[in-house]
Image 1 (cartoon, helix red, strand yellow):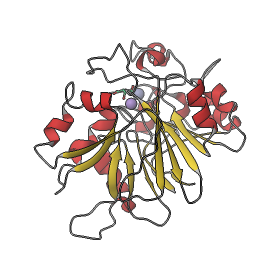
Image 2: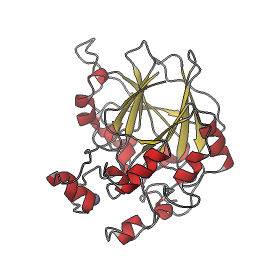
Image 3: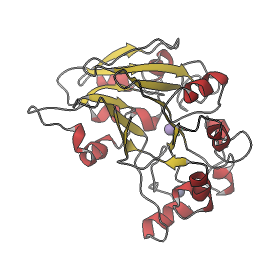
Image 4: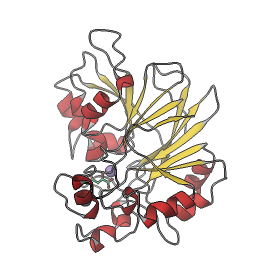
Length: 306
Ligand code: MLT
Ligand code: MN
Ligand code: ZN
């Protein structure tokens, strides 16, 4: 399978429109070696196919499609390589792009869990609004790990795993998490047998999550924050990483430590990186520490063959 990182930043993107933190200001004026990034989304297609699956629909989807020609194979007057959309949560950075896909003549095939469908029908009624345009053909993602495929994308098998993270602020149960608010997805190419574990929002590595990570050839996991108090110490916010459902990378019990326990052959990638994260600065000590630990940082346009 071929994986394209469409957007590697967390909500807000990088640089964020209203932010003058060290990273955002430095990227803007060019005093920092750091690449701009759009918001969180990946696209996966089998090796010999045009059509694939869009994982999350970011507010930047139109720019992402323009930047990645493979998403517009131009086989017909109106065309797209997006055979279906899979949501890992219902947050703004993962769901708002659904609005931008409304000019279809058929309902948009969409996979999400029941809690996400509920949030996108009530707190943020994207799916109801889309009913006035192309409509949505929603498929339920179950939480028992049973495999599913997206029609039109044969040979890619998906399995969801409920994660400890956070529902969107507009969710009626933002502070009372339910299984299915957030999922990780294992994607297996049945021909090569190779697999990716994708979890851009991951608050806690439970034994089930670690097993899923250890069973994959590559992991693409939560790279939002370097430290738990990053937004506080930089003066840009009052919330800690774990309060909004993200496991920080640095220190005991952090993502770097967990990734170091994976089998040596596992490819390790961080994705969904917040604009405050020092790993965005390619000359930072934190970025060097990741390189030393064999951990890669996703950037927009990255192509991975598995
Ligand atoms: C998150 O991943 O925590 C959210 O997407 C944050 C946001 O919506 O800004
Ligand atoms: Mn997010
Ligand atoms: Zn910033």
